[in-house]
Length: 110
Image (cartoon, rainbow, N blue to C red):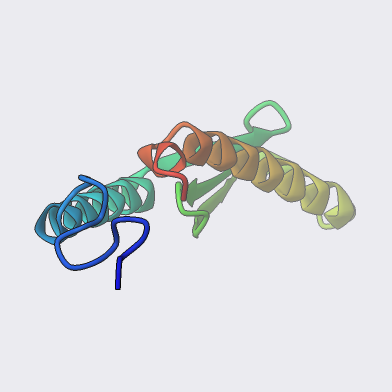
C-alpha cells in the first residue's frame, strides 16, 4: 500500500529532526527563565503628590515597598493619603506593564 503525504518513517518533509526541536525548545525555555528572572529583579516606582508618596513594585508586579513623607500624614485627612497611595501604586503598575511589554517574554510570545 502506498503512503501519502510523506509522513511515514523517515518522512516529515525535510523539517527539523527531533533532536533539533528539543534543543530549540530547551533554548527557548532558558530564554524564558532568564527573562522572568530579570522581570522579578527589576524595580519600578510610581509617585504621587509631587513625590510625597512612592510605591515600588517588581517587574513581575509584586509589591515591594511604600514610602510616605511625614508632611502628608494628616490624621484629619486620611482619605487624601489613601488617594495618593492608590495613584502611586497605579502608576507603578502601568510602568510594570510597559516593562513586561518591552521584555524578551513578549517577544517570545508569552
